[in-house]
Amino acid sequence: MREVIAIRVPPGCLRSAPVREYELSEPVDEALMRRLGEGGSLQFFPTFPRPFFRIDRPQEFCAQGIVGSPVLRVTFSPSADAGTREALRLALGGGSADGEEG
Image (tube, rainbow, N blue to C red):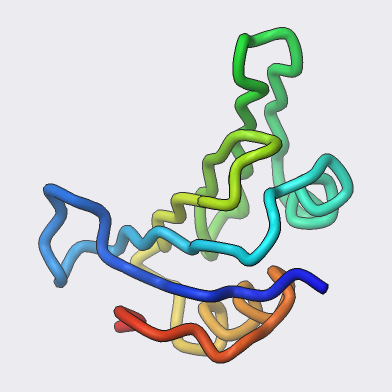
């Protein structure tokens, strides 16, 4: 079962930046990508050498990743609150992620 195992500030970003990397226990698959895209805009490029996707959910977040990679990069909207972050963590499978959350 997939879960979030780490949440961290990406290299080169300040802690105060609204960007986080979510590391999952299993790679992102197409089903998870499509589920996260519900209620937003999904761009998927399956023909890229590494199948890239971008999900825009206005007022919540923009997520980018590679299908088959366990890392998802998320930029939160300025209007996103702790509830948005928690809902995303649960949508990714929950888990008691260690590391950077704030």
